[in-house]
Length: 296
Length: 161
Image 1 (cartoon, rainbow over the protein chains, first blue to last red):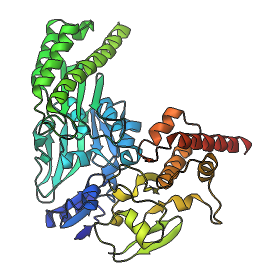
Image 2 (cartoon, each protein chain N blue to C red; image 1 turned 60 degrees about the vertical axis):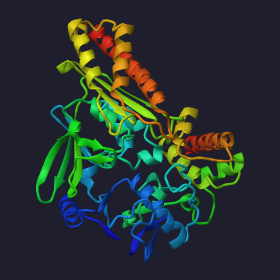
Image 3 (cartoon, rainbow over the protein chains, first blue to last red; image 1 turned 45 degrees about the vertical axis):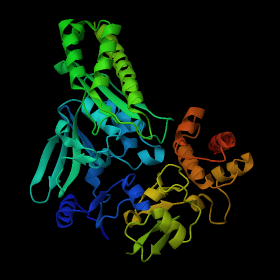
């Protein structure tokens, strides 16, 4: 096995081109588990820890460009304003020690349906892009809706590495909810991310751990957008009513295709998704109503 | 491969390190620092917690090659050079927060980091900070006592300085 330690991003891309099967490692919170248990014996390990720009973030215009290796701890401490949904999701990752090392790049690279960042990224809207690069072809942006393609599979090529994620700065309330047996060190039984986007009058959803890939509840989004527009609720901030939250929950539930496994049954996942969808919608809508009323 | 780094302020060198090896293995088996414990090897238990460049991490999840040129501080490094226990260590002894002792090194490092950041944490803060450290003797109440004792002593020390 080789241990590759590129000092710069260009060197990392060159190394990935030369060793396409090299396994990138940053925080190591997934990769090292596989190594320790001999699940995976890659031909080479590509250490990204020396590439400082991967641990940086910036806000340009209305977009956060979040380096792939910015640890979850820093997302919680530094980005809960512009990225409230992702910060909430980050707070449910592992434990303090895990959050000190792990970052969104690892979630995206692993593309597990249970990754906590995914529902928040999906809910953040359709203008979320994963910036990847290769030595041969340079940089490209993959829309988050095109990124997840199968169980633990993403749409990256073998010679590509994740540089950062582009996420619109939140312009409305966002929430994240996750089911597990305790408040720490839990792989989601299932999870749900939800965001209101008042500027373009849309809502965002993200389902975790309840389908082969993280996925959006498209019909639920469309239903809610329809109701909010028809009733002028974006302007008034008036109550949604139980019928709307109930229907939204049912549509989120219908969008999932979970399985029975060690962490929970498919039925339980469907049921809890409906509950989480209802709750996160209510929380965010109440926050939004307050903003409207205080602005009036 | 060869890996050189700083452990508890001293330069160390490990040879013939396997590329997939963890920092925990290097500490315990190659550089004579067996204080960090190997229990779960998947980041669940926190028994292997060490400082890496000042940040507490699970050393079982850090690849040895990643610490090249970096600074590691283990539970051994919480005591001073003469072997006198650090404030957190002494509080765990005094509170009787040790049963089998296997989880203790990780709890000590994580508590040290907590109190460095916030000398007077609430019980909720303590529970959250230690949420990644498992004690399978389930001696958590004494551990809470120890952290509160360490916090009180640290605050008293700060006030008298």
